[in-house]
Length: 417
Image (cartoon, rainbow, N blue to C red; front, side):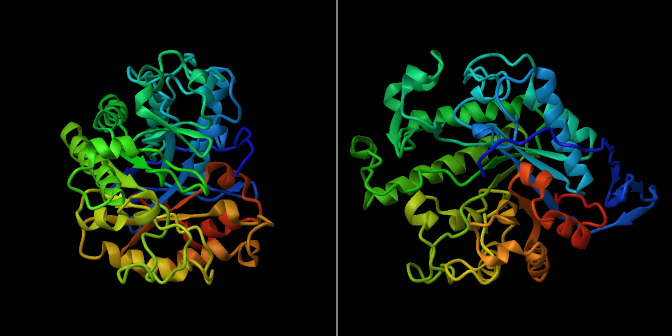
């Protein structure tokens, strides 16, 4: 997952959609465009890709590019999505308590210019929304609520960074800085910062990833004892209090989004295992080393059952047959979790593993991901798939994405709404 994406090749196409009938632009086949203009009626399904900005994972390919070069790279990703017959781009716009738009709450992200707080000379989020919609794509704005920095030195943050103005809000852990989720003012602030984008831009969804309380680091303590002592009265233990803090963040954000713009969706993409069955009879038949309920204090299943979110996109980043966390066991489990709710289920797919020699043998087969789509098609609750990440969609190391497109994305589709 490390490295930098280069400039992505893509063909500018405009997709015109009316109802579920889709006008299909030319598709390159061996350099010769297919005949265009025919229309297809297809089922609604989400076909997405994540474009990560933290550490310049996908975009921009490196910090300090000119505004024109940054914009060209971004638009190339949108064109790649059209070329692959995807319909949604999930763009990371708040990677480390900073912003890829002119936010009144937080500084400009360092991944644009190399200097946190430096104006890049253009509005990436505004441009992304405009250009995505021009191409018939949805643009989901991806925010990380609590991560402040991938280091532990507050002096390296911009002078006006809220984490420097409120040092009591911040805790170091595992070599990183985090906002403390147990402080009510922190929860309100991160909501305000994210919702500014909802107010100002025509985004289609607010999207969160899998980071709530940080992933456990052996031998280290997330030192929120003082916060627990102050705010934890009435809870049986710190774990219950932490889960309630995360619940509050989710529920309050959901309510505030709908008050601002009722048509903006709220989706979360958690780690793929809520709890193992050995821990909880309601859990999945897995033996995962991380359980979101217990380790990240994120009751992902509960949020679905309570209807707080519009979609859930678990990162089921394992192959079919993987012993500790089998794709073929987790898809049915999540399908049951959403059954009877109004929450859409999309599956996060680990395209980055395809062709990685460090991964199990299944990932060396270009057909593994296509088999995922085939398997998930047997579950009506699955409404689409999202691929990590944009750079891998472009590079497509062993042709796994090509195979998915050829087998499953022959026609365009509209996202569920």
